[in-house]
Image (cartoon, rainbow, N blue to C red; front, side, top):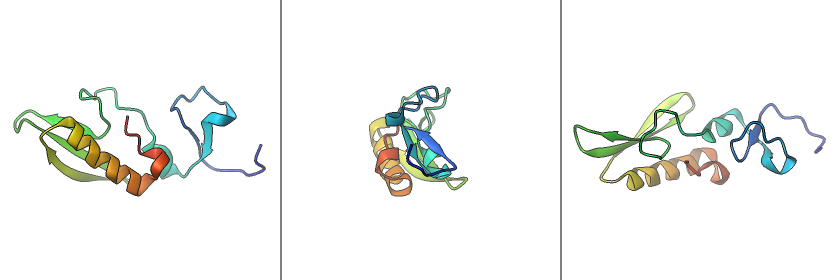
Amino acid sequence: MTGEWTDVVDHINRNPSDDRWINLRKATYRQNQGNRKLNKNNTCGFKGVWYMKKDRKYGANIGIGGKVKYLGRFDTAEDAHQAYLIEAKKHFGELFASGV
């Protein structure tokens, strides 16, 4: 439709069966990976956040370029999520930083 060919097409709403033009955007592989759904084993509801039982804290990390970057320990899942969003925006861009 645009006359351009791209290697990666990202589904904005993360639904791979929704191929409406309004739901598709050109993306890099890295951006596409930043727009993934939550992992099935995620129990706290935020991407990149997990509960550390021993410390009673929440940890946060983000995958960048095939490596995991540790973002720290936080008192709440929401604080850990904010740290994730800041890094996601920095590395994947505004549209890819929703984090849910």
